[in-house]
Amino acid sequence: MRNWIIIALILLVVGLVGAGRTMGNEGFFNFGSVEIDQQQAMDATGVKHIVLSFNSLDVTTVKGSTNEIKASLTGKVSKKFLESTKLNISRKADTITVSVDTKNGFTFGLSILDLELRLELPEQQYESITMDNGSGNINVAELAAQTIKIKNSSGNVQLNKLTANKLTLNVSSGSSQVTNVSANSAELDGYSGNITIEKLTAQKLSVKAGSGNVKMIDVDAELVVKAASGNIRAEQQDIKRPMDLSTGSGNVTINTDEKPASVEFNFTAGSGTFRNQWDKNSNDDHKQNIRFGDGSTPVRVHTGSGNFTIGGR
Image 1 (cartoon, rainbow, N blue to C red):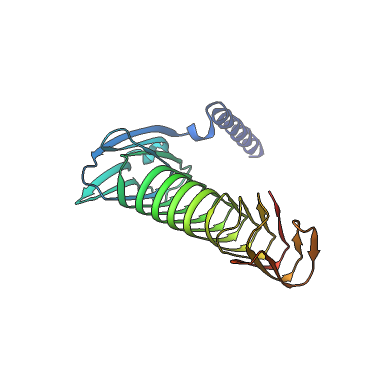
Image 2 (cartoon, rainbow, N blue to C red; image 1 turned 60 degrees about the vertical axis):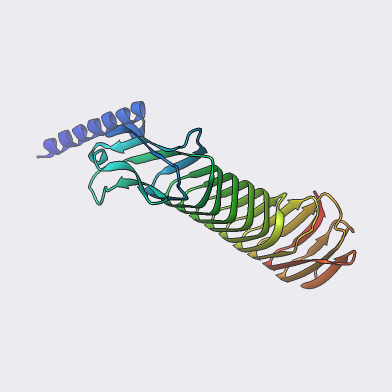
């Protein structure tokens, strides 16, 4: 009996080594998987609304060169999911919906679902573009709409060259990078992950960060930024719009190319120091007001535990 146990263990080890070599030579995501490549297109004449709804995949949108909406689904899936994984484009009146069926349900054994969707949207002014993705990275570029709303549960998000009356981004877990955006109002929420905003123009920008840093570079907008735990940094030419910046635990830094001409800073803190690098002084008082010029632009900063620094970029 003991000999049979030893032989069984030897066979098990040999099998594991063989499987390991297979996955090592072919790659983990090739083990028991097949490639998928699906294409669909639809005429976009008269389309005003775009609805994108996905479960778990990477999404990239680009500006199209024709009047068709083109979608390409590629990647790898387990063989058992090949038939149930389907790319769909449908139209009802002036609304086009793009979705991907991944009806995998609960299964035993190794399950692979590694998909990427590439979407070409004709260059035009849409009334609304909405995207809801469960898990995956999102890259959206060169779109214009009255409202753009993007929600991603888990994964990094990149937005570039967007024009909208209202932009809304909600990311549960993952970093967000927003660049070259023009909007009347922009709302960015991130529960876990850093948020970077560069060259955004808006009447008002609202940012909520749960756990992560917020960095704004050359943002021209009234700022309302709240971070539960993380640093807040703003870098710009001058301060011409009101700011309301608060963090529970973290530092706040405002760096400008020019010394503020007409700004009143109001700083409150549970514990922290106000460092004025323009006038080369610092103060540990937990409530301070400092005025530059006639103070026509209000800047309110609050830290539960953290320093506030102003100075040159």
